[in-house]
Image 1 (cartoon, helix red, strand yellow):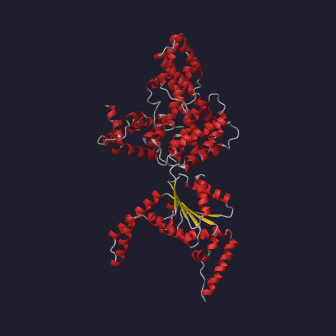
Image 2 (image 1 turned 60 degrees about the vertical axis):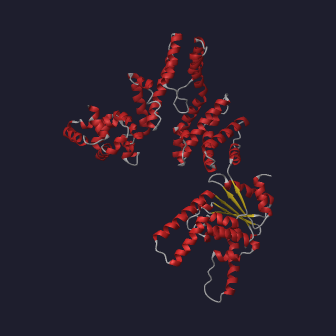
Image 3 (image 1 turned 180 degrees about the vertical axis):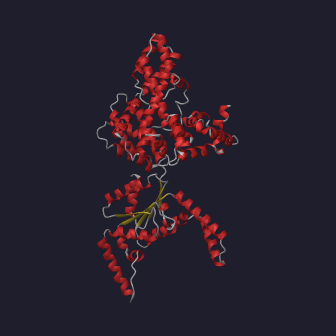
Length: 586
């Protein structure tokens, strides 16, 4: 007999019992209870479950109202009960207005009304401060002893303990801050002793709770939730179904920290991307490669979901990033037709990840193994020629020099160049660099690739870089003003992770911005002339178009005296502007 059967049978065969279900938030306490509810309805259809969520509850009165309403089920029955109670009270009272409140109604309900009732209180630790734990456990005891029904309480004991510790500390503060009368002071001291000896839960647990279940591991629940969701995919094979279930559970164990609420969010988003992209490739012949591609994709999606939900992201989560997932989350869980098309192309590139591994292995075996010139050429043609460079997303990133080395060796052996492949590689890296600049990619994989940056000194590829920047800029911002207005305040666009986007605009545009927008000019000057800003490492960014445009702005004929005044002022400041205007010009 499993845990669910045990709990259901315990509650069905006993009366006047209180069962506690304890565990951390998101561990699956409520999910377990809902399964028990279903089991109870199977073994005893006459049992009535009264489920009370205490999250946000303000008062004892609110709880009693909800219990009464759920026991009687509808308005007519409640009015009938009210009438009966009013009649009884009227016989007692000779005159005056009769005030029928939940306490009165509850007290007149008989044991028979609760005979086949199980009352469940969930989220006890998430009640408001106005509702004490003492009141709740008092009500539990009342339901057990007077109404003789079974009660279930669901909570996170650690959180209750923290709340009690805070309460104890507050009481201590009150004692030192106020001058109590002697009798009240004594009462407070007694209460503090009670708090210090045991917390409220421990005190009442001994009196109220008969059986406690602590959930420490919810792996089986997680597997059941995942399986139930994936079983809804009717057009896939059992092999693919097993692959998806196993990968999601693996990701859940590594990234979700046992949080089932997060798992529900993740499954919702995985459904979207499975439907619009991943499952379109489930017939890919290499199932291991398909599995590896899903692992990378799910890892990135879960990382973005955690960030979106403001859940702490572990360091190993940061290694996986994909901008369309972030766009989907920010756009109310939707992607445009064009974005879905890009998503599919990117995932298809990820499916080719084995080609990149083959290239890497080819290079190693040629260097240290017995791979011949002829076999090297064959391997290059079988792998490199099949790679359709599209974007860096979903791809294994190799330094630019990695491909240059392969192409150079190939040319030495065959006496011919793979010009088309080299063109694709160059275009790919340029596009990836632009995307890195536009999407605030902190890793700077391409910006720090020295071999690749040499390519941009070539006029042809420099023009390609500028054209690509213009294309992406136009697709995102209509004008420099649209870019500035995309920030809540201008200063936000000056932060290190954002400032590089000014490179998407021509210096001439930025000079005009300084000239025509006084507010922008003031904010720029105040921000970069402050001493505190000098702690930032702006040395590499001084070539940014924003700073270069400011230099050009000061060099305008109309600003000759202005420039000298600015130089005199910032000469005494340890600031970014001093580095720009004085230190860098020496």
